[in-house]
Image (cartoon, rainbow, N blue to C red; front, side, top):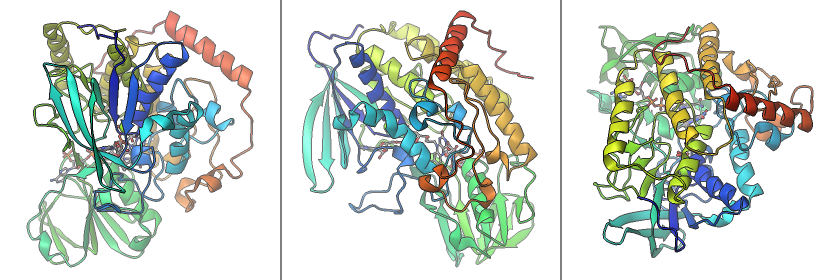
Length: 489
Ligand code: FAD
Ligand code: NAP
Ligand code: MG
């Protein structure tokens, strides 16, 4: 099943978020080394790159009547240490030239992911404000027909491609459950996707429904901006942090009666506002049903060999469709791998072998029995993809250990975990504290963030390079056996 590269392939990449950009950068890296690469067209429905990180004040519909893509909000900061998402092929030191804190705000991370794209002139590959409407596949000719629309004019274009990479994300289409009587609630009910900031919540009682990152962070936003009382209503295990006085966890909401919310434990609360942090749906409206993934937010996705190659059409690839502990660097590994399949550098095994491999991963996924085991599972998957590529070494196990420390930081103090500093697994650079504790920082702009950023202990480029080189050598020469998936001390 080697790719026929005797003619110049055309590759469509759908989406210029971190995953789509990883794909572009992967091809650019091969080109830099002198490889002949396919013609690449990246379709991006927004007017700029960055995906979720490209903040919009809009919610609901955009200026073209399309649904708004990004679910991010003002005052969104990284919720994990940046050292776990650092790109091995473009470090934070390379971009910022000095240490920064471990939890940068959104705009700073947007700037970072844009950096290597600008450096390599890859914007040229992206058609902005262009939405993919329809993708069809012709198995006989091994080609795809892609219909796209330039949103400002409505002009549609139909083109033929040999490979398609779907990098459209999966945190944009809200999952909105129904609660009995919710239509009688006189206040505002929004989904986290439409939440843009908590300033208006000052003095109000807010009910946040859900038990994951959005529930946790939107509750913290409400607290930070002065909500009188925040209730987090979950249906499984409580988040269980040592919440400050104005935040509490409660049983799942069962029924609404005006402003009164009846909870599953028989108690009730009066609230002013409801935010449904109930997750998202994978959605591929441009794909016919037989090419689309029909799934949920999980660490292992069926029908994707190595998590990226679509079982039923191996010229179709999906990037970043898994639930995410690792993000940017894992998307890079995936992008590098897809590139190598497309370039014929990695030969896909026969279908039966791919199926056996996917079944083995699924069994490991189903055996996950603890929170740390989730991290180790994703690490194992990440390393499996990484091993098949020439992506610069990234110490994935150290990344999981950082995630486990991060979970401990949150347990110790949910209000100060974003003030903790970590050390880069790539450069050895230790983060410097932000000039203002996260809970007191009401300005999330990059300008403010970079102003007075701690003592400017400039990164010594040579020392940083030498450390990175030695670390890479060690990672390559002394592969530390991975701890068992199930348990980690
Ligand atoms: P996306 O970032 O969603 O990008 C997909 C791109 O595809 C978008 O630009 C979109 O416009 C485009 N697109 C979609 N459909 C079409 C179409 N039909 N035609 C053309 N273009 C299309 N991760 C972290 O590492 N740290 C965090 O702190 C963090 N915070 C988050 C906070 C929120 C609220 C959310 C929702 C996610 C957060 N994430 C975070 C996870 C986030 O999903 C990843 O960081 C990353 O953005 C995923 O990249 P992606 O390219 O796969 O998808
Ligand atoms: P998510 O992780 O998929 O979680 C969805 C939550 O909704 C789960 O807790 C789920 O509960 C709950 N839920 C679904 N249906 C429900 C129902 N009918 N009743 C009650 N609860 C229901 O989605 P997310 O929290 O929106 O996070 C999405 C992504 O955004 C993640 O990658 C996250 O890291 C990121 N994020 C980051 C930040 C930041 O601060 N940087 C902020 C927000 C989000 P069950 O588990 O019981 O199914
Ligand atoms: Mg993308």
